[in-house]
Image (tube, one colour):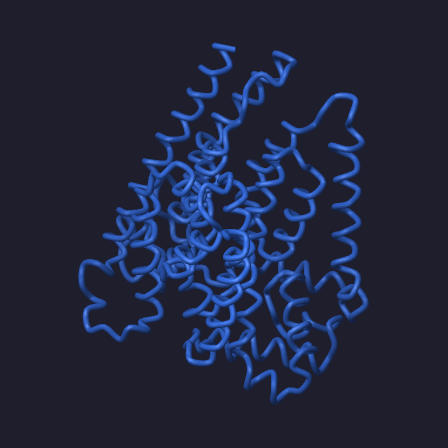
Length: 413
C-alpha cells in the first residue's frame, strides 16, 4: 500500500502545486530582471549567447532557462507562464526529499515525509512564494554528499560538479565532500575510486562549458561572472540574521563591508577569518576519524550519517552567520541536512528553530502576509540571529558527541 501511496500522493501534490503556481506571488524583481529577461535573451539569441544577458549565474541554470524557453516556444508564452518555471525547482525539492527518505533508511513513508516537508511553509517558501532556485542547488548538494557517504565516488563527483556549476556556494561544502571522497579511496582500486571519477568530472565540466565557449568572449564571460559574483552586493549583511547585526552600526544593507572593523581588518576580512576558523573546528572530528583510519590501515571507524548531516548543516550556518554580503536565503542548503537529521533521530530541536528563523527572515524580506508588525521583535535581525547562534552551538555539541561515539565504538571492536 505504501508503495502505491509513495507514487500517487507525491504526483497529486506536485499537480496541485503546479495548478496554483499562477496564484503565487514571487519576488517581482527576480522575476522581471532575472528569470524573464534571461529566458527571453536565451530564447532570442541562443544558449551559446546566454552570458550576453548579464546573468551572474553559473552554466547549469542557463540550461534550465533554455529548456524552459524551448518548452514555451514564444516570447509571449515565456512571459505569461513564468510562474511554471518553479516546477523545475519543485521537482528538485521532491527529489531531494526522496534522497532524505532513502538516507534515513525509509523510517517514514516517502509520501508522509514529503507532505510534512512541502507543507512546512519554511521549507517551501523559497521555491513557491519567493520563486528562487536554492532548492535545486540544495538537492544537488545533498545527493552528492549522500553518494560520497555511501562510497560511490563516481556518482558523488557527477552531482558535486553539477552543484558547483549551479552555484559557487558549493565551495562551502567542498572540504566535507573532499574528506568523504578521500575516505572512499581504496588501495588497489584507485582507478574506480579516484581516477575514473576525476576523468568523468573533467569531461562533464567540458561538456557543460562547450556551448558557451562558442560565443564571442567564450569562457571569459563565465570567468567574469564567476569573479564578480563575490562582490555584487558589497554590504555587511543583506537581510541575513547574523553576527553583524550585533557588532556593526547602521542599516547593514547600506553599509559597505570594506570598512575597517577591528585589528586593521575590514568587516569582510574579519568575517572570512571567523568563518574559516570555525569551519576548521566543525570539520575537525571528521578529519580526525579519517586520519585514525589511515593510521590503522583498516576500515575500523564508521562515519555516521548523523555526523555528516550535522557537519554539512553547520558549515552552511557558519557561512551564513559570519560572512558579509550574505543574503537571507543563503542558509537554505542547511535545511535539507537538518531535515534528514531530525527525521532519522527524532530530534527536532534544530529543525523547529531553523523553520521559525527561516520563515520569519524570508517573510521579513517578501512581506507577503502584509502584516503590520514587521518592525516588532520577532522580525528583528538581532533576535533572529540568536536563533542561528543557538542552532550553531547545538550542532557543534552534536558533532563532537557523534565523533566520540564513533571512536568509542571502534575501541570496543
